[in-house]
Image (cartoon, rainbow, N blue to C red; front, side, top):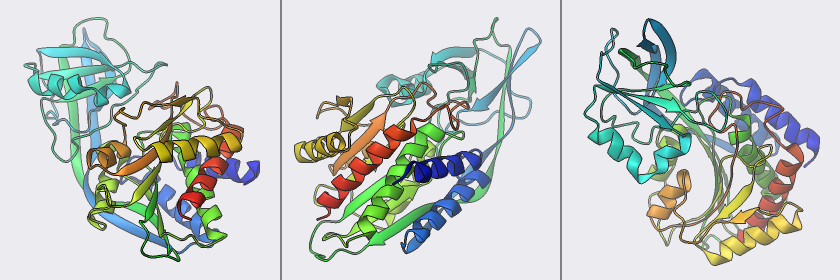
Length: 360
């Protein structure tokens, strides 16, 4: 891979607009990725799934006559168009809070008419929380805002409509020479709240470079590469992928390589997560050889976030690359300032070599 390839892929991703599941930007990114994969010589499949998309209509809080615009929490119920008047809870939370054990408990136990989440990202802005229960909204209406209100909110409007929509997973299957071997799945999310150029772009570069490496010589094991929509909505795309491949997330199923969030984010650090010592070590050595060692090795007992949490909970084998990012879930996560292109190139080269070795 050359710097020109990585830059072109990242620029294209950034140009699609917002990548929310089932929207125009999501469809544009699916079409673009399918074209890129086909240009490398792959036979590409588009696997669709349906959803009831959230389209915000009127979303704000009122404080002493001032309005602060917001964004709904996508797994909370809407208000009516006139909104609700207190009592309202005001809670500062970061995007990572959705993965803590207290978050759902707070949502379910609240005795308030509504909750206002004040986004607490590393930088100011609407650092939205993922909707882990998107198909089954729960609790009271909840709205994100970017700033702490100066006085107690007296009204909250979180009015949205549900619209039937379709989303797409981009899937490439490379048949192996030894069909008795366990398949290898190379997965990366392909949807997000905003442009999310460093959040998702590095994983997509790794995905494309891995595909290119696998097409140069047939692997021994079947390899399936999937770039899924539905990430921010409780991993809808992974659910759809597994519905077509039951049991692949279990201990005797596939081996999963997950290119997670923030790979090569500017100023970020990269970690390897896996409960499998062999997979951990293989990825660690591959990144060292590529000149971009991981900054951290997560404890084997650490429960991962994102899609590999689902694989972990099912008992499956996985290894994940994931980074941190000051612009995580923020609108400012854009090309070019958000990404470290040389770091992404090196990680992609190392990860691709690890997958080729894993698949034989």
